[in-house]
Amino acid sequence: MIFDILFLPIVFFIGLITSYEDIRYGKVRNKWIILGLSWGLIILVLFTVWYFVASPITHYYYFEIQNLPDDSPAPVFTINLDYLSRVFINAIIAFLIAFFMWRFDVWAAGDAKLFMVYALLIPLSYYWKSYLPIFPSFVLLINIFIPIFLYLLIRSIVYFIKFNYFKITEPQIKKEKKKFDKKKFWERIKNMGIMLLGFVTIFLVFGLLQQPIKNSFNIDIAPFQMFIFAGLIIFSSFLVRIFQKPIAFKIIIFLLFLILIYGFSSSPLATWQIVQRTIKMMLMFMIVLGIFKALIDFHISKTGIKEIKINELESRMNLDEMIVKKIKSNKKFYNKYIGRFYPGGLIPEQVEHVREWLKKDKKIGNTIKIYKSFPFVIWIFFGVIITLILKSSLMHLFINLG
Image 1 (tube, rainbow, N blue to C red):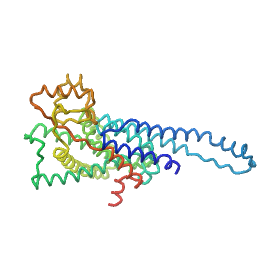
Image 2 (cartoon, rainbow, N blue to C red; image 1 turned 90 degrees about the vertical axis):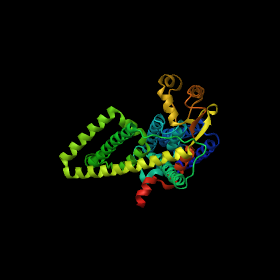
Image 3 (cartoon, rainbow, N blue to C red; image 1 turned 120 degrees about the vertical axis):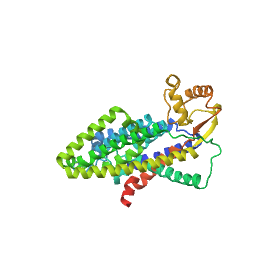
Image 4 (cartoon, one colour; image 1 turned 30 degrees about the vertical axis):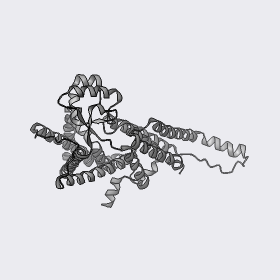
């Protein structure tokens, strides 16, 4: 209860103020991040120090100040050191996860830092129904992304029906004729095959090593499969890029070869059943994920893009993917003046260089496409509220309902 009293008010304050500023100004100010981190770290450090000094101070208070008899009870009120260590470990892992999600363009820097703040401030008791050892805040991550995916999926289906069956057009966006690219098509098929091998290898490791690990170390890794599956969804774009690298492909093949040798040598029938089940599950997963991504791309192309004049380009704006590819193809310009496109949009130092580059390219014209901003901060706060109410992940809830 003491952590609820100390942390939850600041969680709601930061959630409300950052959501308001994201809607109004389109950014998360660092002062709220610093406030949340400072508040959480100071309180946790004080409790850690108190753990070591609580007993002598309590003893002195009861027997030296109040002069109680020597046999009087002297209860010591403190926080379990194991709990405090788990809080710190969870916060460190949350920092690493947030950093990598920012580094690999899953979300903007402000969103990543905000997730780190919430992971530090939300008491671990709010994850107990689907508690994941070492990193319980993965529940929060799931509760942030699943509502976003569902929201985008529903909107995508609605707009797909509207644009295809009611023949509604988007007047402000010029239509572009797209030709079938055979090379690109086969490249996608190849990438899907590599992705399938990677995912199958991951789940085979779980399926075949679950019982040996449980027998040897008394650790049940079965609950981790749900979180691995959620991780595959959240980090799917990043994982595809990783699996495409030649060294990653070789590692996948090597691991798959080793796990199959182990499985067929120890339990051939069970291994074959696990292989069949895993391949079927991953094929279904990839088909569903492919349809989902296609719908999301359709939704973005129809509702998430707008045209502006080149001179109207400002910082924090996200350029259309085709323009980004063109700029990246000019390696000399990209390396010298851009360096990297950030998920949060263009930084002030990049804007003028991009404007000049666009004006020189006669094929582009006077207008360009940019992506409309998405209020991700509000969805993060929504995920926080879901976590506080359910004390579990939405995936865990859906599984139980099923």
